[in-house]
Image (cartoon, rainbow, N blue to C red):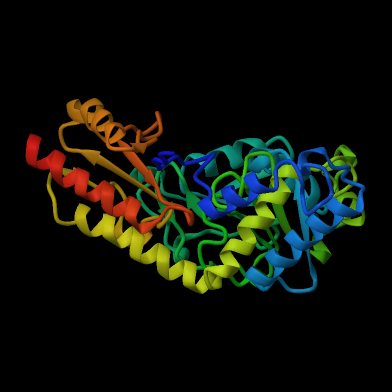
Length: 360
């Protein structure tokens, strides 16, 4: 069996030990005679799987007791509607910090339910940075302040938790959650799709403070009302059972690696290998300001973009796939989430040097 180095932005690579264990348990989970995919979500077997997954996630992130963990569906795009429907609480507006394509999607969707105030934007600089906190024009009467902590397309990441006062801070953390330790208590709500750094597509994680639950708009579908989901322990409707099972295996794998502090160091070293090379060559360039560069998604461009197709073909021939940048920005993008080993990044840099020697 030959495994490639998969640099996909999502659905993304999973840890190989997780895949192997899932394969071993595919036909018979722990002597039950069933695959997890066949289990009733009301049965004791799956209820135990879900409870273990939540317990591990709480342990990894040190989630305070006054926060609920919800296993939902619809991805981050779904939460772009679900969050305002639940969190407006009689308020008329939401503050947004615009750092790229995913921020823009959140803003567009929220406008269906409230006034969306863009309190800071990096659009004028081509989304190459996070706007400095001191430039944000926050509204103290806003329902919440929304950020996207890591923009997968533009490769811009927050390396700080912004202080927004008494207004709840809401973050789309789809692509950098679990990549480093996090003080959950500084947020009112955190959400993210699982398919980048947690598990398979289909599962959405929501971590929400208790006092923000129970205020859903009357139009909110029951399955998307945080109060209903919480009261039913994420079992109001059939949850994405297999995705929750795989997520639980990933959480255990993260714990076995030494937890999030160890993972943060792994990710810093891994990204450093690539950024150090990009900083010393004129053949490639990074479009993001150094203090805002993502440790999860590294976009880069060849100075001569007519070589893009040849670069991608050569990479694939060497077992490195999904390096093409998003269609909206072009170039290349290496997504190096938790499951990407440092050997994959070293192999990419070695190829980049080889390609530069041939074409530079």
